[in-house]
Length: 504
Image 1 (cartoon, one colour):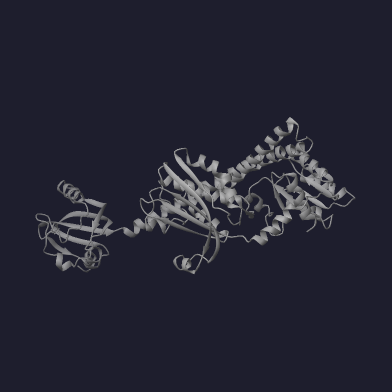
Image 2 (image 1 turned 45 degrees about the vertical axis):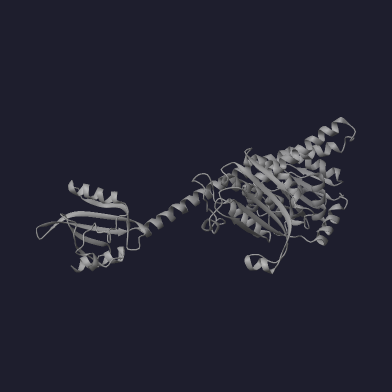
């Protein structure tokens, strides 16, 4: 009797002929919430103590017992005294007590077990999604490397050819079209890397209106023809400082999210405006800081969200989409980008009323901007120093050599790190700058620079690569104080960067 009473599960004994509850243990009270003394002497069908959430489950049990079948560990839903439906497992077996046919019923609440199982499945799903995104990122990085090498040759050689053709010649217009197409292709590669979150962050001062206008066509392709994309730029917009690829990523994630909320039909509105936030706004939005901001808002006419969903939308891997249709990383990425740039984000949404995301980016002060514009307007200059350029892609090497010679530099061009190291050891003159690819067969660019510095003290180094940021990071390049220029680059880009390195 002591074992019966103290068993950790709910146990009840009923009479087979009329369902009268003969006895129940303490687990009955703990699991169902009813006092055992109140239940004993009543029938199992008494509405006060009927714990079957689905009557059909009880009917199945009776059918099995009448057929002489024992029931072992069958899952079902039960209700206790609070009326809440919970998952459970029960077993039922006929027994005889004092010669009378009875039924012993054992119930275990598996709510916590179910919760842990769901959490385990959720973590497995998150790991799968993370692995999938990593694989996509690796693919994007590999494509970008090869594509950027080709674009370097296309853009660079076209730019060089333009300098040898008069603007009045018909060839000039054709070359300009090639150059523009090459630059647009470079933008597409940059956007591909941005979506894979592998783009080096290079913030710069920009007009958000210009940046948004430049990505509208791509956004329209993303959301489809059935959705109307409305662009409402603010007047005399203040400047902000952010990586343009991050703006691309913000808008891509928000517009795709809006498209899905509207079931692929409706209107998405993108707005920009200047906003001054005061203490009153801060009291309602504690995550904000008073000051001057540029607001980027994305509104949709979709299904909207209830408060519980709103509270979780920026959590990594949280998604309301069907399994296999969303990663749960889009809005988490949006939140991370906004925070990284010193801003904040607010969301207004109600079920059936659509959603508006408002991003606030700090205003970039005019006086600082004017200094940068003046610096950028300074005439690009070449030099007479000696530059050793190392690149394993011959077409890129030839282009780089031609660019450097056009800028006036004395050029030593070598294909591959092994030959470069041997040349540096044999060369009796001074080498002022090493311009090297990062990822090459044999030793990488960083190791090459360290090797040459041993025989050419004071050597300056500028790294170049078409690989994504994570690959370069593994080579130890994207560190504080390291000079780097991404492919593809123009003659002006190269000229400015070389002078920056040599004069540092």
